[in-house]
Length: 165
Image (cartoon, rainbow, N blue to C red; front, side, top):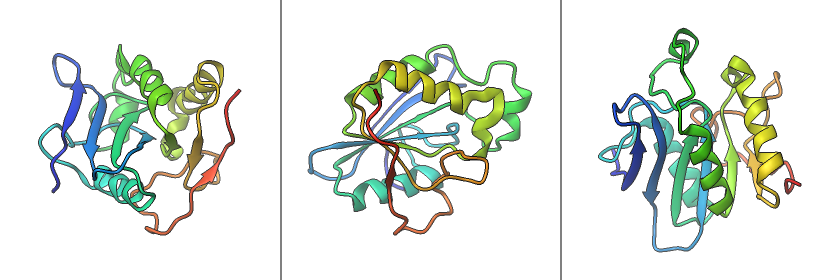
């Protein structure tokens, strides 16, 4: 797997708040906001991050940032439901900081974003505090959540929510 260049974790590494991968010398930062971190860290990627890198690279971005609506590192979404603290103390701060600095924000957390109404909470937070953010998605699920990228076709078009006000 490809090397990841930077990542921010909680001190116990249970939570990953931000991950960065340099894709090319091109300008521009594409941020994917997904469900929760899995195994990717500052040394190696994982299938979901690799997929997000492919989308960002195909759109001409030189850097990928990944944040998640839940900061807890888990390989199965069911673990999020069992953990009493799946969000992480510093997660919202990192989401907002990255959203305000990225050139494009792609929401991509899938149906499990309904847990704790977290997807709606994050959307409201972005709408309230991230005016002007260019925000898109790779389609919406039947539950009206932004689709997760892992099993989508590489040519899935990016659609936009519009600028947040």
